[in-house]
Image: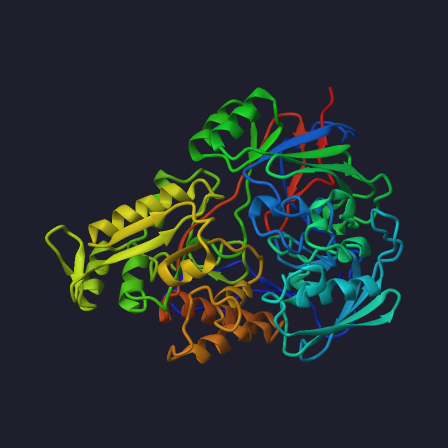
Length: 562
């Protein structure tokens, strides 16, 4: 595989550096990719002998899939099962960010980044024996973006692939995917393994309605495992496919998985997950508390982590509500967030300090630690004074007879977020802001959140700066709730959409910096808090892989039976 890696372009003095480099994802013309190598982060021991086949790996997660449909799943814990059942067209190297082959072996991209023609791997089958081909790829993307009202299937991929026009079957193993406007990040997106992932599903699943997709017998993929048991909120059991032999070359593994089965066990309480790991009830666990991580390591457990690439966990700031429609109030909130302090006090050793809206693994992420993300309570107070909010008798600021009270949501699926958000709550009180914090907002209707909440938790994963466009573009995700009459609404949309305009590394680096400036400084749409993600594995478990989106792969995983 021929690739060119470009150094990031120089940045203004006020920035420390770009994190990561921009590899060429594709050039116009055919790229033959079958010889690529790659690396993955592996959890568990590296092993002192040859991998052994057999055994069942029981792994504890905070939650279970709300559906077995990978296009629908919307939680971090739930999306982890998808890589074992549904393959992707491309593979992203976790370290370099470069795109390599998987179910697609080569591709062409036109000059405008609107047409992507893929040559598909031959000899691939779904778990029910039906063939993988260009026709099934077309049907996948059509349903993913447009949905199927007759089956009750929503257009789960519409926000990700907003300008998708359609797909053309060129031959049995060649498919052309066409967009109405430039979609340069598409090659990366089709490797994506997070929420609403574009894993390829078989015809039986495509023909099933939403309720039928809760039945394992209707879940058909090309992956190394098949779902054999699903008990919502309890467990999901996967069983090995003996005939699997088309893993991503980047995983450096030929043939079927070593494990006979993988059992995901749902254990909501973090302390109970840790206890299950210590007792041997499970051999691995996600979402370990900071206090437990050091204890487990001292007890001899192998702990390997990878921060989640995408948006750092934090708050979308609602620009449509008073008083967060005032940019000085938004700036004051961001300056009252002590990110470096979190790293020293409440975060696990494996978790990272947020230095941008983008996590450090995302190519082009810029360090704003000593700039707009600098913790400065005095500056926060000055900004609120300037905005006309005066400190009242009880210490809470007031303006025009109203208290400066903000409503915020938390993230129950990321346990450590409670401590960071509660710390921000205390800091905000110091500057005269009353924060009404709802840690578990999962049962609050979306419309109510939009109308009542000023700070709305999110943590969107995707290892590409285009996640900024997906999340913040008012014509896409509009997570900052930018109203229709916002003065610079179109400028924001155009600046973010430009991330899709080019694959040129230098140009894309400049566009990524502009997008971060827009989100964090020019309009202050987001308050990044920290970088979460970790996995703990007991001794005797080897090579649990974490991909570029920090999701689990079990193709190479094995258990020492001795």
